[in-house]
Amino acid sequence: MPNGRTHDAISLITIPIVIISSYFIIEDLILIFIVSLSYIFASFMFNGDLDTNSKPFNRWYILKMFWIPYQLMFYHRSYFTHGIVIGTMIRIIYVLIIPLLILISIDIKNLMIFINVISHEYFLYSLIGLEIGSTIHTISDKLF
Image 1 (cartoon, one colour):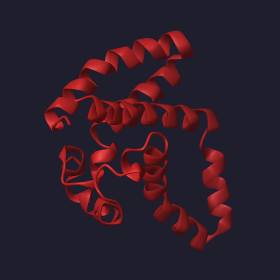
Image 2 (image 1 turned 90 degrees about the vertical axis):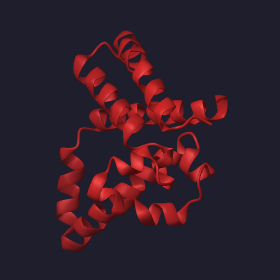
Image 3 (image 1 turned 135 degrees about the horizontal axis):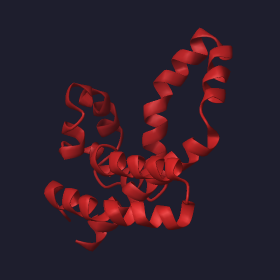
Image 4 (image 1 turned 120 degrees about the vertical axis):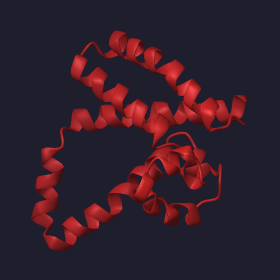
């Protein structure tokens, strides 16, 4: 299994591949930017290694305390943290659950405004970038 430095190197090497591939598949510069930025975020800050004291965990600095309950809920390299699609979805739900609960408790109308403000297309391409980053992380764990 690769260490943090190896994961970072793999991420840096694959950034141009993701950008170029996105260009040929998507052909929309804004969506390419969204996929690429989401990929970079997933690679360095939002991958399966948030379940342990790792480089991604420590990159959150003071906000890393937010991830301690996540670490207590899941053991390292479990299907729920390193599973393709499921790992990313669990992290997204984990991050969004508190703001969503606050919006719901304040007023359901605010939640609906929040949902309508988010472009569904931008959100979808953000998810794609997050998943590509997480998948490359998981595959590199299995290969090395």
